[in-house]
Length: 87
Image (cartoon, rainbow, N blue to C red; front, side, top):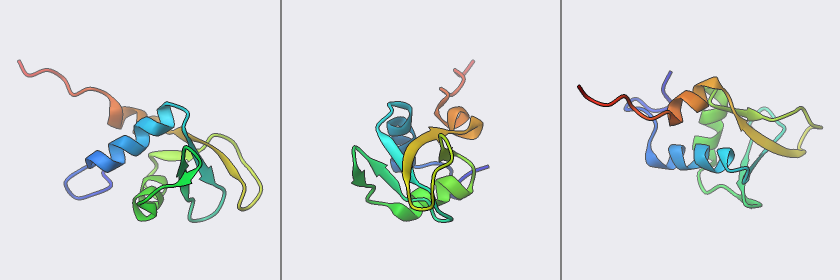
């Protein structure tokens, strides 16, 4: 699964790292907006894509429009895993 034809870009990886660091929240909606350090993320299209492609999700359910902590899915964790070393 990849967000972009060429895979995850640096911005997407930075968003995932902010989630791991506990700095991100998602709005509970069909188009979840991402907030980092309380500020709306500059690329909501990419945030929506990460959610719809299964890389990120709300840490728990909330009321429609409520901000809840963001969490990585298994795919999000895998995307941050270091690449295997070349032999």
